[in-house]
Amino acid sequence: MALTLHKEQLIKSGKYDVFIYGHNHRKDNRFIGTTRIINPGIA
Picture 1 (cartoon, rainbow, N blue to C red):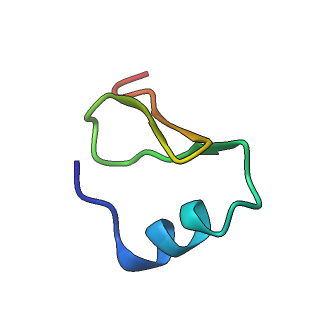
Picture 2: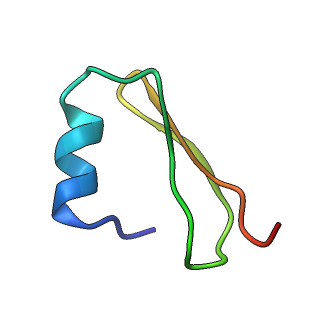
Picture 3: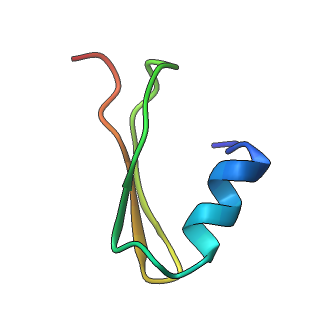
């Protein structure tokens, strides 16, 4: 799943344990490094 450059920079900064995003209606649940990435998909 492609993330924008800004989102990737935030995730890779290591400042966040969890990064939650949305708007594209595609589920995502994974780790990049130690940060968990979540997109709930359609709510």
